Length: 261
Length: 261
DNA sequence: GTTTGTCGTTGACGAGGATCAAAAACTTGT
DNA sequence: ACAAGTTTTTGATCCTCGTCAACGACAAAC
Image (cartoon, each protein chain N blue to C red):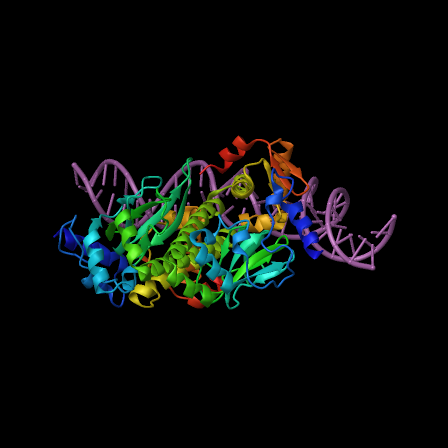
C-alpha cells in the first residue's frame, strides 16, 4: 500500500498528461530494497542505456543491479562522497546540485526517467542528487558495471553517446547562464523542460514543474524572487498559465523566440 | 622559414616558462597540408587520446590522419557546419565559442595542446573553433576514426574518460557563471588557466593569456570593461601583475580562496 | 613617419537583478 | 479544523555590473 501512495504522488507530478499511466516504475509492488531487477518489464528500457544491450546483456545487468525506491526530498548521493554506484533513473525526478562553502548553490541539472547518473567515472561524486518526487533507480556497483562494459562495446558506445549529449547540453546551459537575461532564462528553461517531457509523454503544452522556484533560480543563476516575478509577468502577459503542479505554455512561439539558440 | 615565424609566435604565447621548447608541433618542418602523421615523435602523445594506443594503434592512426597548421585568427570549424572531422590539438591554443543570433557570444572553452575536439559525435559542430595562436592539429575523418574505435576498446574508454572529464569541467563552469561575482570569476579563470598550463609546462606563477579581454569576458559572462577593471584592481592590490603576454599570480592563496569550490 | 585597426583602460551613468522585509498561499501533521 | 512550516508572491531599496563614450598603447601596412 505504500507503493500506492507513491504511485499517486508520481501521478500528481507527471500526471494529467495524455498518457500519464505510462510512468510506472519497474518493480512497483516489491518493497524496497527489492533484490534484482526485471529489465524486460522496465518502462524506460528503450530510452536509457539498457537499449544498447541484447537479451543476455539485460540478464547480466539484472544480476549486478537492484532497484531502489527513494521518497521525495531524500538524498540519493552527496557531492564529495565516494562514488560506489552508478544509477539509472526509471521514475521520478531528481535535482543535481553543487554547493559552495558559503551556501550558494548551483543546480547543474534535473534528472528525468531514462537518465543515467555517474557518467563521470571519478572516484567521488561531483554533485548531490536529491529526489524531487518519489523516485525509483536501478543501482549498479561501479566496479561491476565497469567490468561489464569491457565485455559490451555497444554499451560503452551508448554511454559515450550519452556523455557527449550531456556535454552538449552543459554547453547550451553555459550560454543561458552567461549571456541571457532573466526573461530569456525562464523561457529557455520552460521550453527545455517541455522538450524533455515530450520524449517521455509526448508533446504537450502542459509542463509539470516538480522543483521549487528556488531550485529553478539556482539552476538559472537567479534568485527566487526574480523567478517568481518573471513567471508572474509572463502569466500576466498571457504567455503562460501557472497551474498547481507546473505551467501551461500558451504562447509557445514567443517562448521559443526568447529561448532561441 | 614560415615555420620559424610560427615557432617564434608560439614561444611568445607559451614562452618564458621553464621548458618552453617542449611545445613543438609534430611535423614542424613540413609545409601544410603535410601528409600523414608522425605520432611517435609527437610531443603530446602521452597527454592526449593517443596514449591509449599500442604501437600498431598509433600506426593505424597515422594512416587515417594528417597534420594541419592553422595561422592565428583562422577558423578550424564553424558552429552549425557539418562535422566531417575530429581533431587533436598538438600545439597552440583555440577558442571554442557559441554565437547567438543577435551577436552575443559565449565562449564555452579554450583548447590547449592534448585536447581533443569532436567528442560530441553529433552531425554538426555545436561551436566554432578559432586559433588564438598559430596552431597545429591532427585531423581525422569522422568515419575513419569511428571505424577505428570499434576495433580499439581502450581508445573508446579513453575517449569516454575525456568526455566525462569535460563534462565535469562544464559543470564547474556552470557554478562560475551562475553563482560567482565578477571578482571570483576572474580568480577562478586565472587559477584554472594556471592549472592547465601546469599539466603541460609544469607549475609556474606566470600564466600566459593568449586570448583577449573580450574572449575572457565572453567566457565568464562579463563585459570587456568589467574584466579590465577587475584585473586592474587585482594588480593595484598586488594580487597579480599584468605582463605583456599574460599575468603573474602574486597572491595565489588569495586567488584560490576566491575561486574555492 | 603616418595611418589604420585592434586591444586595453578609465570614467560617468543607468538598469537589471539582488537584497531585505512581509504577507499570502499552500502543505503537512495533529 | 487548526497550527506550523514551507513555498510563492509582492513591494521598496540597493548595488553590481552593463552601457556609452573617449582615450592611450601597440602593431601592422603603406
